[in-house]
Length: 157
Image (cartoon, rainbow, N blue to C red):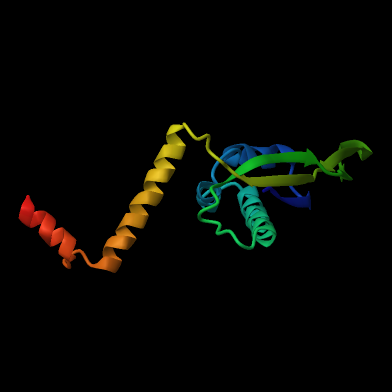
């Protein structure tokens, strides 16, 4: 299930913000958060905050599911132009040069990725969950204790 978050009227140029958006487009959410945390670009902080907001929106829609098990990824992220503030800077001989202070709007959509049944990623995900489940059952039963059927099976072998 999708979740959307929007950030409007960010006072940086859309071109600078698109550099960061292209960096995280299509990535898993955990990887994208790691990339944004250490990115030097100023737009990374704002997109990181927006991604956390989208995660909160997703959590609110899906209260029964855990974020770690949902396999979330950034489905869409796009940057649109916002309004421009037009200012004049004094120039020589009584002229004025126009300065355009640009802004942008960022829209981010996250979704849970469901792997096709025959794909390698789906098989790997199933194996990971099975190994976790067998580890849990081993610790519950206690590997040193053997039942009577296991003792008889070893005695006959």
